[in-house]
Length: 285
Length: 294
Image: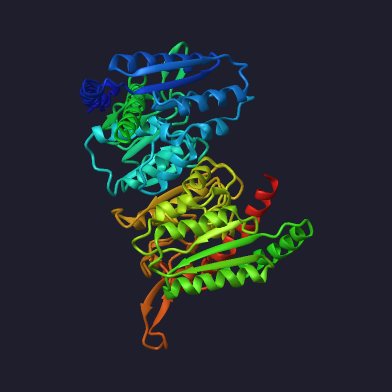
């Protein structure tokens, strides 16, 4: 039996409706809109297209979104100066800096400059650190959307076996802590791990985040497993994921497509976090 | 085959010897590492920990100051002590002994310690840095486990490490340490907990097995394959009438039969235990060096 599809738009639909209703209420009460500042440096095509998408989708929903497009030769000092201004701007509730940054700019310094209360993409170490406990902080949007997709399947994670391929700072590492919070057993490995197919075959939930197109093969997947594909690569002008979708969909129980899977929810989760920050700021007066 | 015993006492002594040399060298440059300890209340176990920390500092030639506060001390007054230590140049590391009385927020107190002086490694900024693989003080117990492995010739690189238990102070940070692409790490890491259906299924896959569940003898011999490296983090009190105290210490591992199968094993007591305070001293010396560079 072919796998059920986990489509990003479908997963995000109820969140979208919920947010739209809340925004309308708040706007009628206060006349205020959530402010999201997005910073992009340079002209990496994938980043540009992602940021343009954020801009379009956030505006549609009633966010006051401003994209700061900086040239690739901007100095680190000028970038930090901009972040500092946004930190103190009361109309801005969320700040997101698109990666990658050019080599002359230290991404860690940039991420640490963003006010943790406005760090809606969960990139500040203080928000990463909160993932170790049950303390509430902001979660990286991609990680947040993977968790939403798993929730969409309505399969309990308790006592299940999850396998994560890829240990990046923005996906694999933070996701591992969230899976443990949700009481899964978890193996985190990477694309060079020995016996990788064997490890993957044990997974009730398999998450691929390596950036290697078509890396996960059908015989790596346990029949009925939930397969979430976080990878996005360009092959011959087309977007493809880390999973050999055409084959794996015959074995998996659920599978997320690329494109149209994790991507669209990620933007929704970024807005979700910005709305949270906005509500906090209203509550604080 | 009987396992080689990894003696935490010996490894700890080796590290302390290195630290003694390092502290002496730092002193020549005018840098004296110092540990500030804050103890609230008189919980006997806490008092004993704090004493061994103070002794450890003296042994390796470090400055040490312990502030003892009554158990009804207001949160604000605890924060004041930390604030003073945050600004005190004699203090390079601050440790607040846990548990704290219920009226004091642990989150707030830990978050108040200057991250540069957080030698316990539990400030969220430092945990975040740990996750990203940046230089930071590593939480002492998992750091001790890593040192025991590396210094006994069991580098985790490329190995399958199975951690039983996902506590905030051991399981999770240890997983985060060993999954990094870094020296003494780079392992495939599996974390299981007591809610897993079949823990044995996982433990039998381990090249390195770390037991940190806090359940005496939860790991039995049938759960361990021949040649596994076994690290026992558990320290449990079990009733024992033959002891004057009425109890003895037992690990999470059923030691005797597992020692027959494992290639290496850490005992309880004398395994991971002695490493924890030692890594605290280590973190304090590192903090002193970093503070001086800044």
